[in-house]
Figure 1 (cartoon, rainbow, N blue to C red):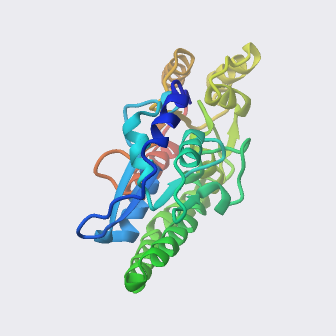
Figure 2: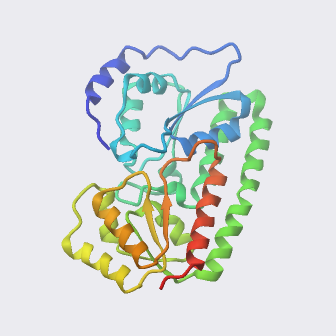
Figure 3: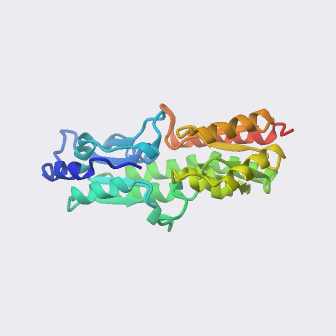
Length: 293
């Protein structure tokens, strides 16, 4: 992600380090780097929290995200901050460091699931991530608002129970299609594909696209050959980052009647995290059941 003008934003942050003001309803200020983490915070916090999600535009390429003075102010005022980590949202880590608050709780998803820079950073597609994040958010809210601990515990239980349809769908697809070869433009859906038991191909190509580097001619040719020879059942692509080479491969897949499934890096408007995941799993199941020749 680009960080043009980050030094200037740090200077801006230095001017707004006063303790965050508390509204009359005394809601806990939560800032999430990505809107799926913000959605979980809302589900756990209910009307006791005021949540701001920084990355929330479904039409924006997350790799081109840039911070602004307004974002700096939102982060500086947060009592609880939630971010992905694993070098996905390093801009958030830097801004939090530039605007420290002694009582702020910072929740890093990567730390909770033992991931680090260099690992696939799209952690929210790993079924193990959101339960861990939800528990951490509930713990942070309970520490900040002891009087309502039981409310947060109850909402956490509700959230964890709401993941059953998602886990059931994963198990059903895995039971029917485990071992199926698939491919992708970049590793956005990688953890979920692994949970489904899929065999992912063209991973070197995916890393090049994710890191905004030119894939090698060999990797491109291998991807094209997989599509032409129907060595994969489905192709996944990131709908928010669509380069010419990815467009070419999507068109090649469709021309060969290989189903193409678009996935995203932010939750679409008016959907919960659970519904977003279920929608994409439904698209995946339909694609796997479709003709590949």
